[in-house]
Image (cartoon, rainbow, N blue to C red):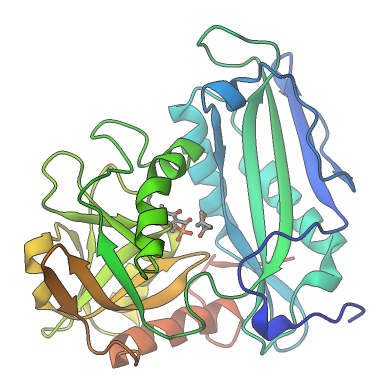
Length: 339
Ligand code: PLP
Ligand code: COI
């Protein structure tokens, strides 16, 4: 390996790697994508992505296995979700084959930056789809850019399996009832920034949002889904049209049931009932599984297992998921794609 970075302490930061992929949609079709060393996008000042938020993105990782090979975790699911996002925002869709080919090209071109096995670090890939061109009225663009760039990353929240503390956002929603919460669009993240900045200033890892209709049910963290474990061995995660359908969450629902023998439930999680969970976690591509040690909700405070130690079931779920991602545990069929 030619590159020598402090792999164990990367955190989650942008890094300008040598190559990224770019393809352009014009006159109803995609150009052949190509790799470029230029990390700047050159787009019209009137691009709908800039003014009206007509854009969407994805997040997935490449994992170095023990034998030195590199693999992706369920990239077809990211492709399908970006297509769903594109439909919601009237954008051109990126076919699954083109999406996976782009991701593979970027991983291969930046192979030296795929962290070594055993460091816990991965290569994070950020596919981005934006509406561009000379448009000033509110309407969908005729032209699009699809790009995929990458960077090596470590933990998104606190290091490894150290539990984090979250606060329920009572002042701001991230999504509207029939809005875009279920699509991966920048507007959802823009709407979450004030709550996140406030949460971090008060010493929390992030905010947790409630359902925007009744403000009684847990939805998700700003950048990850929520799950809880009950004393009856139930794995429960919220079901709502305004949360992002997390690929990690659906993977954990499957693993909880088929590998750990838990009862896996996607259903309503009332904030006032948080006390029923003996363990809890935030899950996502960036977050992996981050144990939740505590959630504060106004005057109420809930502690899950411990504020300093990961609980046994969250640890088992983590080992199963991460074991599959790094190739140490057998994956359900179709989950792993070799680069
Ligand atoms: N929820 C939000 C708001 C996210 O940004 C993410 C990250 O992608 C997730 C959930 C987790 O989704 P996934 O597991 O597909 O990465
Ligand atoms: C991801 O987990 O891929 C995300 O998109 C979360 C965040 C960094 C926006």
